[in-house]
Length: 302
Image 1 (cartoon, rainbow, N blue to C red):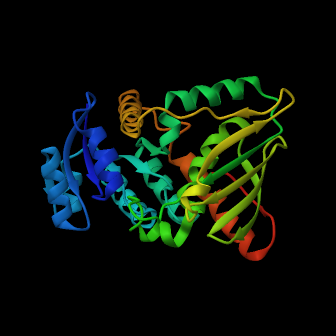
Image 2: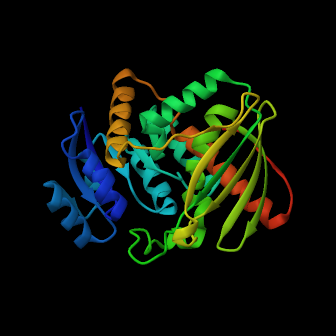
Image 3: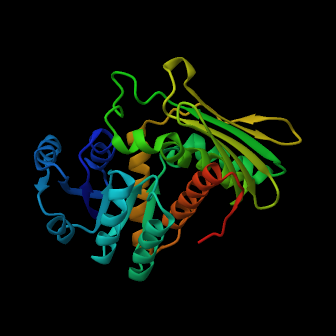
């Protein structure tokens, strides 16, 4: 069992991470730190744990931290926690720049620590089973993914998220898109992209082995345009990602269990770890560059 602290107090922290840590058989939920002390106390009281006004004091009392903060805030605190010897369960994206993602990877690797990225769907069994079967089948020559959300309509729990408003679907749902295709088609080696209205990005990705995928991303759509679809393309015909039914809290609980098992076994590399998270950041950063400069960007992996 690992002692966990939670960094963050927003909707996702409260309704997913805190809910998943509460009563987890492999984790002792110790406390909450947030940038707003009043919100940290309210969330801590809700789950019967301690509220911390000093993040370093929380790090002293735990073995691992779960993070639910904007990615630019998350990256610095993740490095701080790793340097304190704490294992990490980060949210996606790991950071908003490759340099910041590399710093997180470097801090974990230097400490011989375990770290996972909670890209929700990767911890849903129906999603993992579909990808495993598709990867085993092979022969895919491409895919098309459309992830269109309506995050900024009245009543959305993400409507007051400044980082999502600024960086849009590329950075918010882009990691989900990559999680649905990279395990099947392989790492991305070349990125081309264009930006369109409603902060929409259209990506053309070449993968190792030659497969090419198209990805369409936005979280600034009208509710009527909301779409969540990935279709794999191959000689046997298209294969569509199944409907996802596992609750987000159960997915997070699975991520906690996986991190605890990795720590117990001394595992510091995992297909869902911060190295994979860093590679996703590299693809998204390359897409920004490609769209801005009108060129294809070649990638190198960590």
